[in-house]
Length: 495
Image 1: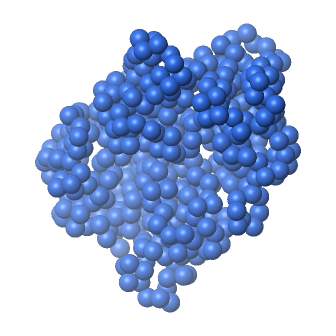
Image 2: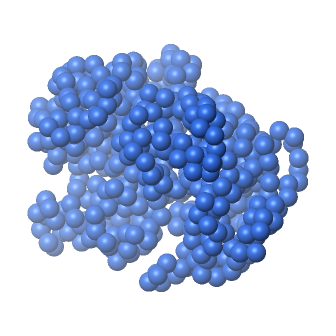
Image 3: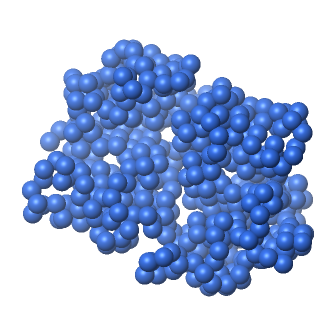
């Protein structure tokens, strides 16, 4: 079985409700069996293009198309059986309550013989290193585990066209390596189009790089080595991730070895999901200090996101205690944060969820940014200035009137971080704060978080992004292994 062929001629797409096009004037041919790395700054339309090639965009319902886009000469909607797409947000792709059933869903709908379905499911789960059996509940998976499961569901279909939108973004290094191995195995019989910010790690999987520009189609196309040698500096300046380009290091400005005042203390905490055979987190202790950035790292499923919700006061631990010192909680310090009033909690501890949609409350990006400070009584003029500054710094000004739920994954992430910053909480607990960012917006997010820390705040960031650890972390906490590690040196950072 050979891979599919993709052709675009003057193709463009404008999402419903948007004034500007997500993609415009795209001329591109991807031959059968080619392995393409699709790059571009935030807003260049990479995810939109993948969705269109997969046949998921319908001009009659979701927007307006122009030009021509075909898969093996067919409208992509008529060639869906040839394509397999792993979305940027894997949770939107899971449809069944059990992991095995979710992977089996596609083969069953393709009428694969019953005797072949479960061997196919087991092989796909093993290929991506899924750590559980078929009966694992999908609502008890971490973000990284969901990502592996979504890829397994695609691999089970043996697609001729493999479309991958940041398939390793929320994976630990070992899991990411397993996923890359699984992709490499499928590539022998499929055309591959890959969107990935871990460019150096992705290069062994591709033989061609295509760079998109917002509103400008293809601006660079060719072998990876040639593209990065000839255009690397210009691409990096425009926000494209380019290998071997150093990133800024934003450790504490004063270079202190010690920590500031202790603000939040978790003592021997644990948490078990209802009906789960094992705890998501057990017997864990940690302190958060003023003026410090703590990075929480570790394998998928080790309890990082669970720890984040416990420290943020969003969940009550089933064991142990989380307590705030008086410097953070004031009179409320006698009670655990999960028992504080919502307004008081948000003013002291800001949270960024792994899925940013879980925290959006309004119908406009501008309103989303203004909601928190306005609710806390901040003067209207002050709120407006703060909102305009964040919109500008995070490349969201042109989306100010847009519904937050229609943004791209990277745009949603930036908005979720910005909404947490607007309420000026002392403690910021962030789950994968740099997911989906181009180089330029990544640097801006790190600068905003570092400024918050330098002003005496606390950063607690759950992350698989090694560059975050290198650039920002003053202390590194590893779950599922050793306890506390020193910060990684700048020389060890890799983009």
